[in-house]
Length: 448
Image: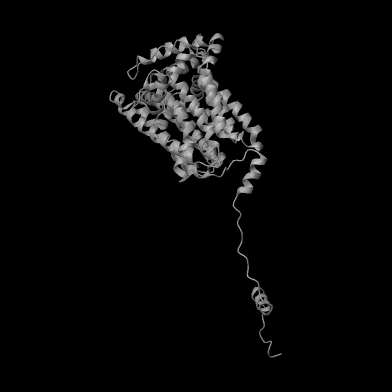
């Protein structure tokens, strides 16, 4: 009798251990969210975001609503790494450069708690909430304080919510993307440049271990964004960037081709061809050189920006329909925010978002991967979309002067508030006016 009871208890031991591990991680996440709430200045939105991500993540994992082969691969690699650390296996798994960060971090969590992929889901929920806090801070740093709450709630859009709770690299990549944008916004303010530069270096360095190629493109886009946000003649700056792009499409491409950079085009062609064979794949053209990459952008870029096309949605699942509708909503709100948000901070977000969209258009081969990677562009658009929800009309005041001269010019053009002048008093009214301002008790004065 006793032995049978003990055997039954042993059968439930792994489940109890897993429950305790999840509880510890959820409790740690609660402490982190509390600290983030104090930092962001808003508590309720972050707790709602944390609860929504936890509920969605556990629901999707328990019922296997969104099967992910990549998640199974990451889990297997993390377990093999754990076996190597513990001496069970003599062979260390190999990781692709620029993608090893998530597997190693997952292996560390397995080593500290218990090896189960649900811990990866819980960890990503915490990181997604941290991303929401950083996006709130971006709106405040760019002078859009009223849009902070909206930025947190926009992270609950179906695409951002779903891909961030799956045990994939996306959640950490988005966090480092948001941190890099937040630090770049600090570079526009002289008093914060040193600390912002340190945060930017850390965010980029960590991001290189999760999705290195995308982080490199992000850095280039942020550099252009900082340049555009600091220039007073925005039309000239935009024209200069367009001229550089056109120049690259012409004689500049031949110079780059001689440097051997085009050797990576073979890898891009193989990747796109492999991706196109998936159920959600679309027809791709083989690149012959960098010039062919540029020439195909008129057909590939619209697919990333507004795709899937209506005629292609028929062959895709309901999940893609929901994600597509949410993406279009985010895009409309972001374009509205780009027109109405005060200041020049819109360039800081729009430039890296455009760079990532161009890169995604050149490398995509199926909608499944494209939609998942497109959400990184959505992370950069969230502050703009929040501004589009908040501001009813375009503001002409720059809330973020980047130089002392610009601050002085802004102060000169600020409307001066004048107090109403007090009417002059006649000599015989002054005594009564003084008595009114300084009342004196005169009880019993006549009797004396």
